[in-house]
Length: 172
Image (cartoon, rainbow, N blue to C red; front, side, top):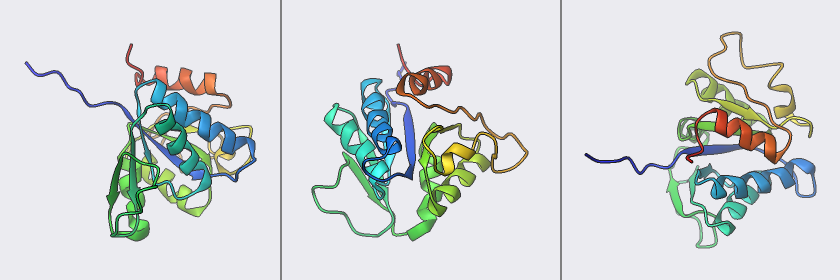
């Protein structure tokens, strides 16, 4: 009998600028995921998603980065595994599907498209609230009325850990 060794995977979606509370929490979220043995999936394209990846690696975690171009990024790219998909913005579907859940931090139009795709494919969404940005509105304004997936807001690292545990993503 073979035991699965696949680690849970959580996508980090969104954007937040350095110096903001959301940016700080993105980094802390990356470190937390590593400490919990959860693989981070991050495009690493925005400051928030990049700092989450960097902090995860610093904490000994694994980071899968799905990048839009068809070329490998340079060796300093903050990831342990890189997939250059060559699909441009269409890679947002891969981001939405690559996680057992999706953490949403702030966000702009690209984040909205990833969130809608995750919603359509029934991935749990964990939006950061209390720090402004688009993710702050997500719990009260979901993509549509279907209630496709759990919406689990968080405003602190302790709340994020609790939400991840409620989804069964933390192995004891």
